[in-house]
Length: 409
Image (cartoon, rainbow, N blue to C red; front, side, top):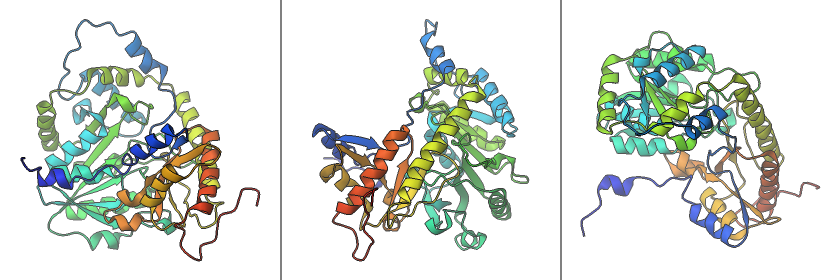
């Protein structure tokens, strides 16, 4: 039998989805699984987007331009201007989700063996995109003790070699929900300018910032206008994950032309998704205000609840809808599987993503999990109580760890 390629064998499985068989088995036993493992919001998609699909009147579902429909790209340019991001429609390539935008960008910007520095923990699929493009991920560690703030400039400088070609950030962050400050972004700008690097900025959660915090786009940084690559997506902004529509944005004409060739090779982004996404640009501000308010309430229920459990550390995120919690456990992969295989409380259990998959060296996240607060508030409260009870029963709690107690005691 022919051998599978090295790249195929080394491609990591998704830490977000690898426990699905155990969740399905739990459901088969009648256990209700609270899915906090994946960023699939239960928020309704905007009516304007759904109506555009419901009332579609076309006789042919045709290819669009490889860069996406011009009308949609012009609409996106107007949307970005409302957020202080000044780009033209011919700076934008519509992609099959933010994932394709990242993959195309890595293939166009980097040679095989080049290095990209990423603050960790980071979105697990960055590893997969980098491997597919032949790029080496070089992690720079942020810590739960600092709330996952940007590491100091010295930490970046120590990692830069002749193979370093870029830095990749997610802002607000997945998996941490951390929101970079103006000062932190200025630090990144200085590094990028000094070493003439690409700065990839994954900003798909820009609408979701809390406690009066404000999102600042990397596209607004002065002096590195042609170094910045903006990655975007409609998935979380409009709760339209299945539309599979994202965007690659650059003011660098040479880079744009290179990425467009990759886009031409896959012909076009999805027609239905673009129709819905273009209509979604008419979503009223009240929609985002309501969604952000709801996510803040969900965050407070989950994060505040977790921090009442002895031995649990969970920084309060300023954006997105994720948090990373450190638990008093021996191994997060083992614990998350145990929750699905061997535990239930009031007929419920919790599915989370082990944080081992969000670090370049999995052992770093051995006591951490990522949780997505994308479900209604009562389910999040139930999830906290399940985890409180689970940590009382789990056999892999290290010796000397304070034991969780019931909510009453």
